Image 1 (cartoon, rainbow, N blue to C red):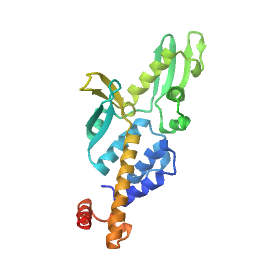
Image 2: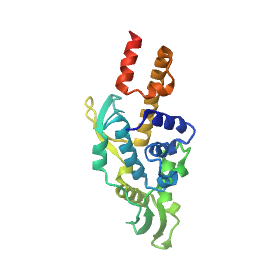
Image 3: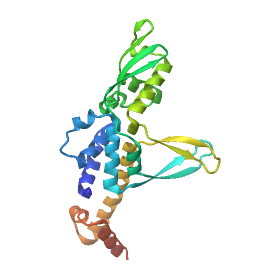
Length: 242
């Protein structure tokens, strides 16, 4: 179980770092002996599996989210399990892979967390996708010999993307969602880094509100309130409100 003070400090620190690095900072709260460079050189799915484990430790196994039907706009409530996602996605590998498509041969590696630096600040998803694919490509050749990676045909890049997804499945989690109102189905992508950060933000706001109420009522300091178990803190809040 993560101590509330530790998670609260991580939440505060993460406001000063790029959004793409927040997942690493969260992992460091539970595995402080591992340097940041350890996480940066892992494949993206390894970070995401670590964040799923951390989420179970911090908030429990059951996760709830919200999707919106792209056809009728209905809100769809999703309930899923962190442990089920871990069981259903094999750890990724950092080995070299070969893709043969349309007379092209491409040598590539799985994407690492450090590759995300290349798309920091991007707002164009198509450009971000292309940049990440190029990061993964080590070399390529076509019918007439070596080919620069940025000159590869679109269908070859599609094959590269398929290979990357298969090599690191935990980095490409999605849910099959069905709208009960209009009966259409779609794939809903799931990003545990964003999901967990949003949860931590909501949790921190609620906790700091509890600290304010109890500190005002009893004269306690922040550490006094954080040392209370959630159950005892709730009882004191109920007493204050009566």
